[in-house]
Structure formats: structure tokens, C-alpha cells
Picture 1 (cartoon, chains in turn orange, brown):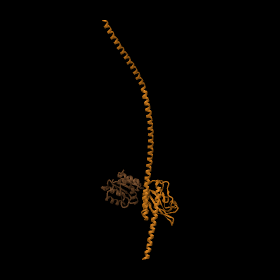
Picture 2: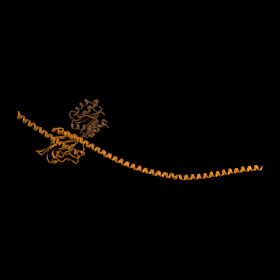
Picture 3: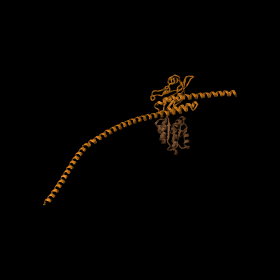
Picture 4: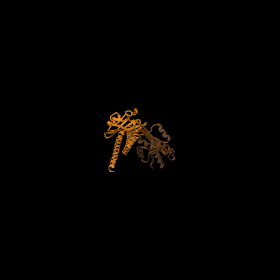
Length: 273
Length: 125
């Protein structure tokens, strides 16, 4: 080998060593970078759960608050529903009450309309009888009128019993006489335990025009299906008795005036013929 | 909705008026009244009725006789009949229903009962 060739060989070996060194340095850089990145990954991996935990914790708190709000709202809504239900029940009960009042007023209107639809005394008594049966539900009863000359109360109409079996009553005597005298309603305390007695009736209602008693309605027995008096019956009795009294009084006055007119007409005819 | 024709057979004018007054609250009704069973049959032959209310105790022809005669008429075999009466005993009720009545109402009358029965039999909501 010549000196020139030896020099060339040595230069190429130097060059190779330089390349090799650079390759080794580059490899070391890569390994360091690799190490750094691994460390960074570990750091990130360690920090990640904390962040998620923190984030989940916030979300959990927010949702818990929302749940509490919704629970409160639900509670309020349930309370409101309960209130509305209670109001509805009140309305329903009130509706039934009004319906009943309406029915009673309608019945009373028809009864009073019928009572004042005629001036015929017998017809008035018939209408009173119908009303007592159909609206009050009595099976045995009588209509008794006061004779102010004799102060005696006598039956003028009855249902379910013979009129001749009903004894006349003196004003102020017994239950019937006392009702006619005081003008106060009488009801036995125990309807179911009542035993029929013509002098001690189940119910006795005065027929009054203002404070003036003209007679009494006397009930001895109710229909089988009517076992007791409803609250409204007590009011109905009084109101009907008031209308019945006026109707009886008017029809009697009319009958009397008709009779007197007929008598006067007879006299006039006698005098003029 | 065409009005329902309803016949009330009752000898008491007060009762007729009470029943009629209650039924008029249905609004879609036309009411015809008869004084007794015979008068009721005359009215039934003159026009068609959708519902019949009848009393039992009436002069000339009572309500039970009317019910049995109405049921023999092919035009009225299916027409609902309501008996309104003072007779509250169970055997009276059974007798009326056996003769062909569809409902039995006892006195003293309650307008609500009449309305409820009419609504049910006429199938009005």
C-alpha cells in the first residue's frame, strides 16, 4: 500500500467514526426524549384522575342541587294537587248541597204554585194531602182546623185513617191543642220508636198566617220507606204549612163571600121580582 | 239531538208537575201527561214514546195494569217504564218489575232520583 492510499483509508475511517458518533449522539438524544416523554405520560396519567374526579365532583354537586330543587318542586306540586283535590271535594260537596237546595226549592215552588192555583176549599185540601204524601212521605195524617167560636180543633181531611176516628181537640189541650195555641212545631224525638196515638202524634205543625194559627197538620205515620226525617223536612214542613194556611184561608174566604153573594143575590131577586 | 218523548201517567196534578219539572232539566225532552191508565193508553196509541213514568194507585186503571198492557203491545215491548209509587214494600217492587217495569221509585219523590233513572234508561250522559 502506498502512502497516498494509506492516507485515503484513514480519512474514510475518520469519516465513518464521525458518522458513527453522530449516530450514537442522535440515538442518545432519542433515548432522552423517549425518557422525557415517558415521564410526561406518567405525570399526565397521575394528574388525569384528579381532574376527572374534580370535574365529576362539581357535576355531582350541581346535579344534587338540581335534584333537591326538583324534589322541592315535586313536593310543592304534590301539596298543590292535595289542595286542589281538597278544593274539588269541597266544590263537589257544595255542588251536591246546591243541587239538593235547588231540588227542594223546585219542590216547594211547585207545591206553593199548586196550593195557590185554586180557590176551591176542597181542592186546596186535596192538594195539601197530595203534597204531604208525595213530598213529605206521610202515610197517615190529618188536616185539622180551629173553630174560633168554640176553640175546638177538628179534622177536615185525612189520609190512611177514618175522619170520625180522629177526636176533636180543645185549644191548649194535649200536644195538638198546645201546638195550635203556641204556634210552635212539634216532632217526636224518636221517629222509629213512635207508637201511633191519635192524641199524641208523631208530628204536629201549626197552619199559621203570620202569628195567627188557623189549624194544624198532624202526622201519625210515615211511609214504610221513609224511616226518618231529613234536615230539610223540618224547614219544608214550616214553609209548606205557611202556604197551606194561606191557601186554606183564602179559599174559605172565597167560599164565604160566594155564599154571601149568592144570598144577597137571592134577596135582590126577591125584592126586584 | 231530537227530543225524547216522555209520558207521565199520574192522577195527581202536583205529582205530574213535580216529575215534569224534574225531567225538564234534561232539556232534550218533550213531556206528555195522562191522568190515569186509560188516558195513558190513549196517549200511547196516538204517538211513540221513549220513556214512560207511571203511578200505581190511580182511578179507572192502575199503573200495574197499564204496565202489563203496554208490554203486550209490540210497539212498546222495549220501551222503558218507570213506576213511581208510595208502595215501598219489596213485594210491590218485585211485582212491578215482574210485570215489565224497568225501574221502581218510591215516594216521597226526589227530583235527582227521577233524573238519574231517566238519564240511565234514555242513555243520556
